[in-house]
Amino acid sequence: MPAVLDNPVHPSVREFLSRKIHKLLIGGEWREALSGKIFDTYNPATGDVIAHVAEANQSDVDLAVKSAQKALEGPWSKATPAEREKLLWKLADLVDKNAEELAQLETLNNGKPIRESLKGDLPLASSLMRYFAGWPTKIHGETTPVSVPYAPGARFLHYTVREPLGVVGAIIPWNFPLLMAIERLAPALACGNAFILKPAEQTPLSALRLGELVLEAGFPAGVVNILPGFGPGAGAAMASHPEIDKITFTGSTEVGREIVKASTGNLKRLSLELGGKSPNIVFADADLDAAAKGMFMGIFYNQGQCCSAGSRVFVERSKFDEMVSKLSERAKTVRQGPGLDPKTQMGPLVSEEQKKRVLAYIDSGRKEGAKLLSGGAPGAGKGFFVEPTVFADVKDEMKIAREEIFGPVVCVMPFESADEAVRRANLTRYGLVAGVWTKDVKKAHQMAASIKAGTVWINCYHFVDAAAPWGGYKESGWGREKGPYAIEHYTELKSVWVDLN
Ligand code: NAI
Ligand code: MG
Image (cartoon, rainbow, N blue to C red):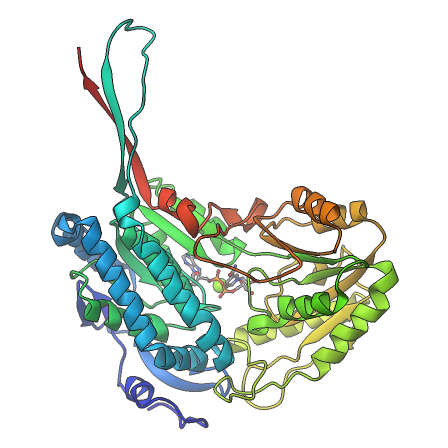
């Protein structure tokens, strides 16, 4: 039975959590795992078990692939683009209709403050769904004027067609569970693929509720399959599956490499959205109040568990002391607590494992001689809390300045010139995002041109939209999600020649 919840929750959330076991969605039906295995899922604010979930493994993945293929051979390939649009739009409406419940589930399972799940994750998720709902009727090929040098005078009609890839598997992490699920599901289905989702083992609940909404929206059986389970089990089975045509993966760079290796059997398509160690650069001529907010939110949003966290803050020397103290003083006032409490500003980390990992980084920062200005300790209580932590006197070579911490820990470092800022910003194996704060337009664009990152935010941070591409340079990944760029990744391009001679 789920533990008693301290804060009131929606009756339907209570009902959802009271189920004895949460099953896998395969072929339009809720089924136990073939092995009969289940695993526990937790409320990170208390450490209590809140639900038991069926654990998918290889044989469940096989079954899901078969039902996905059946859907592709049958009703799903017959659905017109307009029908796919309608279904996606309907699902977006259902997500909105159930937003409060989904947000509470997300907060209970992930820990994030309810304001963030309700005002951030949920509206972004349904807007993504609607953006991609608009695509099916606009995915088209082109006619191409061809001239064949070895067939002088020959005439051809040449055209291209964009077709679905087939079965798309998504392996996603726990930091934005529902948002990531929808970010992958929406373009995959818009392009006519069938979809198998493996949510992270830490946060399966919102994806399972989404599965119920998928059925309510009326998608044909097997178009969407949801398989909670672990990385080495269901995840690895998907990555190496000979009949899964594409994997879209978000998570650690380390597992990204495993996915690449596992994909070589059938050379499946991959898109990878991996780690980051992103620079957030504040020039002395910036609007310093806005920059202070951007520094704070850049690192502490979602408890620092963002691939795009601004975890290396560089401040121009003349304003360094002022900005560092602004950031550390504000960090000291953050109200931590359970995400469901509306007064909470920062929730727990997602798991005991993440808490230990982040505390170990804080320890290493101390040992390597960085100066701890605020935080540095676990929060009170049984939950997986870590205080918002600010380090100064950090050297570029220190572990805390090089590795992705994925928690509320920031390194703040001074710089003397724009050239130095660029050089040090790029001194990383990652290249996901960067922030630049300055009122000088020329400098802002010079920085944007020089930093090797998939996204550069000028005088803002953490803005994303369904239409704007998202992905990384270097070891931050392969490909771009969102926007029209996603459509290319979820389709094959066919070239057709017709002899007109
Ligand atoms: P992870 O990369 O192990 O897990 C992400 C997803 O991959 C989960 O669904 C997991 O079950 C799956 N997975 C794990 N091993 C797999 C395998 N061998 N084959 C197929 N799927 C597999 O990330 P984890 O362990 O949760 O967090 C570790 C670190 O990864 C974090 O501290 C952070 O640095 C980074 N990370 C980055 C994220 C991002 O958004 N870029 C998200 C989550 C974690
Ligand atoms: Mg892992």
